[in-house]
Amino acid sequence: MAIAGAALHGPLRCRARTAFAFLLAATASHALLDALTSGGLGVALLWPFSDERFFAPFRPIRVAPLGLHGLRARGLALPVSEASWVWAPSAVVAAVLAWGRRRSRGAAAPVLPDPGDP
Image (cartoon, rainbow, N blue to C red; front, side, top):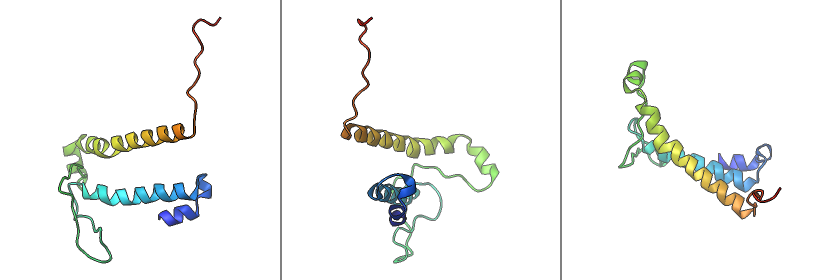
């Protein structure tokens, strides 16, 4: 996936290295996040070399049960769990990376007008 993204980086308007790194991180983190879920059969991290499936020792991310009855019973617990353990940390990482990128490019802070100027 990452190699294909690097090869097709033009439409993404980024460098091949950037597309590769982003897609590699997204693909690798998907399997690790699946291992942190409370349901399923586990993650086949070593497939096709082994059929063994893995779970993380700490599984805080709740998964939605099949069928509407189970989904209604858990209410907002599922989206809150995913937002807490996946989306909020992802947003923090994205903000830190954006801040670092802006800082490395030498982006100047906006110049505010002096209150004493007419």
